[in-house]
Figure 1 (tube, protein in one colour):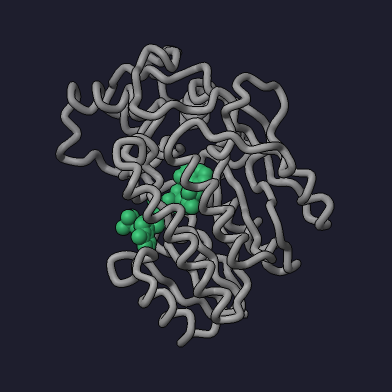
Figure 2 (cartoon, rainbow, N blue to C red; figure 1 turned 60 degrees about the horizontal axis):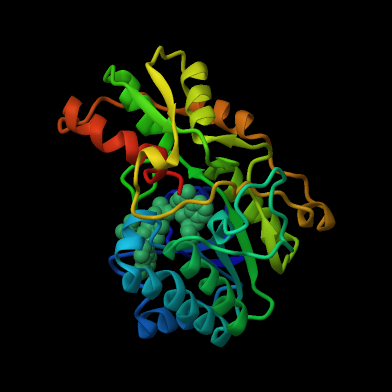
Length: 312
Ligand SMILES: NC(=O)c1ccc[n+]([C@@H]2O[C@H](COP(=O)([O-])OP(=O)(O)OC[C@H]3O[C@@H](n4cnc5c(N)ncnc54)[C@H](OP(=O)(O)O)[C@@H]3O)[C@@H](O)[C@H]2O)c1
């Protein structure tokens, strides 16, 4: 199997590179830009992949809210550019999408399934949903994999870390941690998501498939589990989304379930607790960065960690 992996240096891309069978062409900024149609077309034409996986995205949700044109250029138009080039190269396309295509329905108790009606509540979600549609418009047999709250050892490049690492850094600096307790999701390790994407390619899946951890928690509950498993004693308290006015609104509930995995003969993803335990067990200790000045980091992160850094 020959796979062109776009966004290969990101946190999901890094785990995909480790797991994809066969030959992989890793493509990412700065040499490869999904907004440059000529570059994309030439790369795919020359490589002749069986599959193109598009992981490239602007993933900083607040930055996207403040710069909608840039967000649309990469997450929507870039998706169209990749999809058209994949079609021209006669390759199958897998587009990685997000739980943030949901949220407009407000409170829910059951995870969203693949056939639930999307309704994004912020610019990032709107642009990713447009990316889904544009991928399918050019490649009607595209595979759209939606996942949720990603964290991986490579860290989300768009955000300079991930939620787990941010929590541990705050704990190690002895800082107070305040995390939102009214947004529910299914946080997913990139290792598990990447493994499921590979399984989906191998069964030639098409259409929308959700690949996210089983179970639902709030960001606060996720943080509490991180500190419990990592044996850190932390002054951790819940706050509401309203307590911190982030530029972008977040879904109050965006956990993903999947009926399609079973229909395709695949096993469901593991629980978010199992994924987290494995992530922490494999994690190498990291010395503090020189610029982690206590007061500044605390102020910046108490809001950003609860909403922006790491998982969307
Ligand atoms: N992170 C989450 O919580 C989350 C949740 C659900 C779904 N997703 C989706 O999962 C996918 C992977 O996310 P991730 O967490 O791995 O993000 P990530 O670590 O930020 O990786 C995205 C990669 O895309 C690259 N990229 C950005 N603009 C590009 C462009 N114009 N051309 C080519 N490459 C470009 C980035 O490069 P630079 O770093 O140099 O900008 C980065 O290497 C994305 O489609 C995202 O929407 C993410």
